[in-house]
Each structure stands twice: as C-alpha cells, then as structure tokens.
Amino acid sequence: MKTVYLIKQFMPYFKKYKWVLLLDLFCATLTCICEMVLPLIIRYITNTALSDMTKLSIHIVCQLGLFYMVLRIIDTAANYFMQYTGHIMGAKIETNMRSDLFAHLQKLSFSYYDETKIGQIMARMTSDLFDVTEFAHHCPEEYYIAFIKIVVSFVILCHANVALTLIIFAIIPVMLFFSMTFNKRMKKAFQKSRFQIGEINARTEDSLLGIRVVKSFANEEIEKQKFERGNQYFLEVKKEMYRAMAGFQGTTRLFDGIMYVAVLVIGTMFMIQHKISSGDLVAYLLYITTLLTTVRRIVEFTEQFQRGMTGIERFLEVMDVPAEIVDNDTTQELQNVKGDIQFDDVTFRYEEEEHTILSHVNIHIKQGETVALVGPSGSGKSTMCSLIPRFYDVTEGSIKIDGKNIKDVSLFSLRSQIGIVQQDVYLFSGTVGENIAYGKPNATQQEIEQAAKKAGAHEFIQSLAQGYDTYVGERGIKLSGGQKQRISIARVFLKNPPILILDEATSALDNESEKIVQKSLEELAKGRTTLTIAHRLTTVRDAKKILVLTEKGIEEQGSHKELIQKGGIYAKYYEMYQ
Image 1: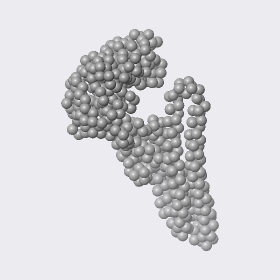
Image 2: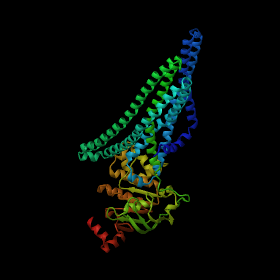
Image 3: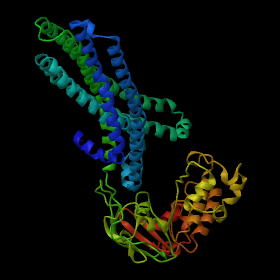
Image 4: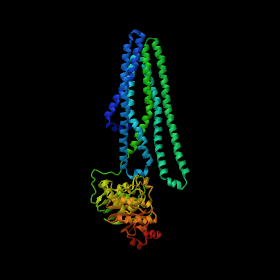
C-alpha cells in the first residue's frame, strides 16, 4: 500500500482528537521559539562585545538571562504537555483502532479464519498497534517542528549570509536522496519483520496449545527445531533491517560532517573577507547544529515512521477484508420460530475450490422433527448444518426457516434461534457458571442451575471445589471431556432455541460418558427441530428421518427400519458398527 493511501485512511482517527492535536502543535511551536532564540541572544552578545564592550552591562545580561529563563519555563510546560497528553492521544487512537479491528474480526465469516493464522491476527492487534501509538503522537509533532526549524533557520541564515546558506541547503537534498534509498530498504525489512513476528506467534500458539500431544509423543526436540527455524529466520530479517538502518544513520553522520566542514571553511573565508561578522558566524554554527539535529531527528524518526506505516498497513489489510455475510438493508427479525426448515435446490462450494461439497440438495424438515445426517467424512454433513445459521452462504439455491429465506432475516435473530452442540467443545477461560451463562448472559443463578440439572451436569458441578465458581482453566482443561460436553449442553438449554444442531456431540467420549451425555441430548431435543450428525449409527436409530450423504449427495433417506430393510449403504454402515 502507498504511504499516501495509508495516511489518508489513518486520518479519521485523528479527527476525534483534533483539538488535542492542535494544542500539541501549539506547544511544539513554543518549544521551537525557545530553541531558536538562544543563537540570536549569543549573536547579539558576541557582536556587541566585539564592537564595544562598554555596551554590555550587567543589567542587560541579566535581562537577557531572565528573558531566556522565562522561555525555558514555557518550554518545560509545553514539553510536559506534549509528552503526557500527546502520548495519551496516541494511546487513545491505538485503543480505538484495536476496538475497530476486534469488531471487524467479529463480522468476518468462517472462511476468513479457515485461511488465517490466529497468531498473525494477534500480532496485528498487539505489537503492530503499539507502534501506531508512537507514530500517532510523534509523526505530526516531529514533522511540524522540523518544518518550523528549517524555515526559520533558512530565513535567519540568509539574513547572515545568503551565499553560505544556499551552499548548506544545497547539500540537504543530496543527503535526503541517499537517506530515502536506505529508507525503502528499511520499509521492506520492517514488513518482513512484522510478518515473521506473526509467524512466531502462530508457531508458539500451535505448539503450546498442543503441549499434551507434544509430550505424549516425546517430540519436544522436534518442536524446538521447528521454532528455532522460524526464530533464526527472524534474526536474519532483523539483520537486514539493522543493516539498512546502519546505512541510513551512517549517511546522515557523513553529511553532518560535510555541512560542518562547509560552514567552518567557507564561513571563515567569508569572515576574513568581512562578508560575515564573528557573531553571525557563531550564530551560524549554532543554527547549523539546530538544523542538523532536526534533520537527524527526522532521519531517526523515519524508523518509527516506518514501524507506524507498517502497523497501519497490517491493520488495514484486515479492515479491508469485506465481511461476506452481513445483513442487507431489507432484513427483518426472525420471530416466533416454529422450526420448519426447507433446503431448496441448495448447492455449495468453497470459493477457492472448484469441487462442489453439496449439489442441488432438496430437504424439508418439519417442525419438531429429528433428522440424522450420516455418511463418510467429507460428504458435507457439517457443511450442510453450517449453512443453516449462515456460517457460510449457499452458492446456489436457498434455505428457508418457517418459509422465510435466511438471507432476508438478521443474523442475530437467526442465530439466536439455533443451538449448536459440537464434538470439540470450547469453554472460555472463567468459571463453570460463566460458561453456562454464555447461552444467556443475563441469566440468574437459579436459571443457570436449572439448565445444568436438565443437562445432567448439576451433580458433578456441586462436587467441584468451588461449585459453579470453579475455574475451568484455558479451554476447560481442568474438566473431563464428558463434563465439558454437559456444560456445553447446559449452555444450549439456557439459550432454549427452537432449532438444535448436534454435530457429532458424543463421538469423542468414552462409553460411560456417552450414555450420560446422550441422555442429556435426548432431553434437550424434546420439542425442538433437531439435526444430528453422527458417526455412531446406534445413536440415531430413533431419528424420524435419516439422510445418508456421500460425495454424490443424498443417496438414501428414511427411518432406521426402512433403511435397514432396504439393505443399501446405511445398512452396510450399520452392520460395520455392530
């Protein structure tokens, strides 16, 4: 992305704090005045002393000292404001950007997360935006101060000697040319660096979340080697970055020397020829120091500038990803849902794949009916269920609930009517009660306990050290698979949706846990339209309708008894599981 585009996209975040920014720049002006006045005072004292020492009285010197001290006090107050309020402004902008980024991530569909590493997203939300804080504060301030100092220095130096000033300022464009060459290398290196930080985060997250698998296979060394490869590559990227930075700063120091030599040699020659006074030459040297310090600060700030630009670019890379599944302008609320579901000629394929997962599917699931989906892995069972809450959108055809196309109703009202119990239960870091209450955030303790009782979870929760206030650990690691599953069922009981999707909810459990959970699921399914995905066919015998999915689509459908009598694919599967 071009720098102009990045700045243009970033500017709206400044708008909210424009008065703070203007006050910050005003304070920056005050600090410039203080710094630019000192050489003028020294010039006056030097010229006066050389022309007529009697004109320099203690009274005048004290007045000049007092005047400069007042300027220093103003400078201190202005600098305090810039450092404190300016940084807070940057932190607030960072906070706003992080909030916008998180809100946008909530809108993105599953297809985005299918292709993106969580570690990369985390890097964009943390380290990238940290750099934006410094950029947001320092960028306008530093460039504004540089502009003032360069313009004022040019005017004052021209007043002292035009020829010498033009020579000095002719060197600056050459200096900037070489600096920009290294600057481009720095930008590329920073981009690589940011990406690799995300890769290291992703590698670390993957390894630590799977630490039990790593240790069970005694593969700690393999994980260390994987991490070390990424870590060493990051080192090489940093070397490239610092090489460019060293060249950047080395060029600056070289041109510093050239400019000082030019002032000393040419300025002294002009002084000998009486084209410049001694006081003016002293002031000239002081202003050159100020000028070089300013240029050097801009050069040094370019590192922060590039970090900020890279952070903004990586922020926009996510923000520019369109939310594929959103409400349209004519969406209505889905209310008083009965649970009648209709698939009308539904076809689905993932965008990046040519292979069709579902092709021309037509199903009618009546209110309160239990339908089981069985078949080999990859036949589209989970995909079919994911289309109902619009985790993905159909490629062709439509899905209707109670006769309403799900694309014509709001996502919130649609998903509020659907409860999902999955094989891989996700519990948030927190207490048992908080995880159950996720199904209804404003639920009372009595409602939470009632839901747990219906799910068959109340008894084991009571036996925990702190009952419903027991901390479950990251992803519920302190609980068994059966316990986690019953908490997830309690969560759905609390939500109380008319439509229920059970996605292989018991396939990962042992026999004893499966029986307990299966009983809870049967209780949960009463009076609800239920879609059950199952590999263990014994768990779906009581389903009113069983759909057998293969790569060719729905090959068989009917009750358990009908399909067994038919002696087809289902009968063969059932016989295999006996």
